[in-house]
Image (cartoon, rainbow, N blue to C red):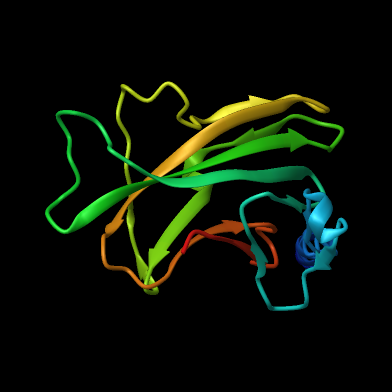
Length: 176
C-alpha cells in the first residue's frame, strides 16, 4: 500500500508540472496599428516586458484581438460625481474571440494606474456601453467601455490587461 501511495504521489506531481508547462506556453502578445499612416506596423511582446497599446491599435493574443477604439474624459453619472480633484476616464474596446472556444471577458480584467498608483474602477447603472462580464463565442465580437476615477492632475495614466495568466505577461493601454 505504501508503494502505491508513492507512485500515485509521483504521478500527481508530474501531472501538476505538466499543467504548468502547458499553461506557460508561448503567449506573446503583438500590437498592430490599424491606420494606413503607420503602414500596419506590428510590435511583438518581449519576454518580461509589457507591450504598449495606443488608441487605434489592436492587441492580439493567442485567443483575443482587442482593438483600443478610444479614450476620453467622461462626465460620469449625475448622482455619483468623481471625488474632488478627480475625473472619470472612459476607454472603449472592440474584443474579438479568435480562439476555437468561448472566452469570458470582463471590465474587471483591466486595472488602471495613475502615476503608478492603482485606481478604482467607476460604474454606474446609467452606462449603456459598460463592458460587463460576458462570454464571447468563438469568432464573435463584443464592444464596450470601461471607466476609472483618476486624479485630474495625473502625469501618466495606464490601463493594464494580463495577456497570460500563467506567465503574468501584460499589455498596457496608454491613456496619458
